[in-house]
Each structure stands twice: as C-alpha cells, then as structure tokens.
Image 1 (cartoon, rainbow, N blue to C red):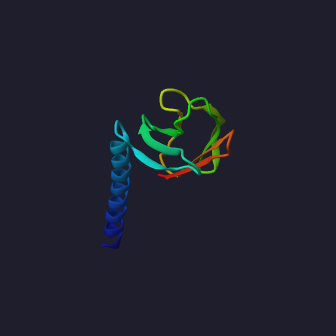
Image 2: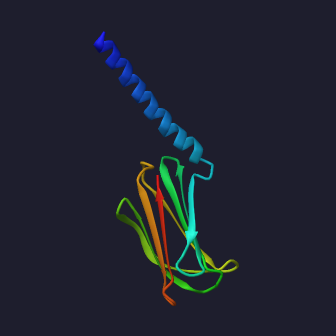
Length: 130
C-alpha cells in the first residue's frame, strides 16, 4: 500500500513539473514572454524582456533616452555570469538602443541589465526573475 502511494505521488509530481515547464514555453513562445519596465536615474526609461525561443531564452534590454547619438556602457548578466558587455549608441528615430541575446536553456534564474550613460552619468538597472 505504501509503495503504491509513493509511486502515485512521484508520478503526480513529475506530471506537475512537465505541465509547469510546458506552460512557460507555451505562454512565452510566439508571445510576449515576461517583461519588466522602469525609470533610470534621470529622464530615460528601460525595458527588459525574456521569452522562450526554440529551447533557448531570447533576451532584450532597451533604453529610451529620446536623444540621438548618446553613448551608453551596457552589461547583461544571467545568474551572476556576464553574457554581454559593450557600448551602445542611441539611434533615430526614437533616441533609444537595444541589446538582444539568445541564452542557453533552461529558462530560469535572474537576468540583470545595467546601462550607464558615458556623458552625464545617468544609470539604468533592470532585474527580471524567471
């Protein structure tokens, strides 16, 4: 009797895990995925997105300053490991920049994106928990 109950509980837990993983993939694939937005230290705004994409995690960090030609130093990390470090320049027509990266599975953990304006010192920090 105890053995049968243990097998039933184990099967139920396995089914729940598969359902949760499938639900995340279904809601993210072809959809919006997960999006967080916020304000930088001055007038700029940021947006950080992540969604499942063929077994990987598509990540996009965008900063909108509404000024063209401004340079920013950008870093993106996932679970503490740097996945992007570089400089981006805001472009026409919106005065924004974005950085896109496809990250390896699994689609879990925490993504942190930071941007610092090279002129003026404005900073942006975005955090997205998966």
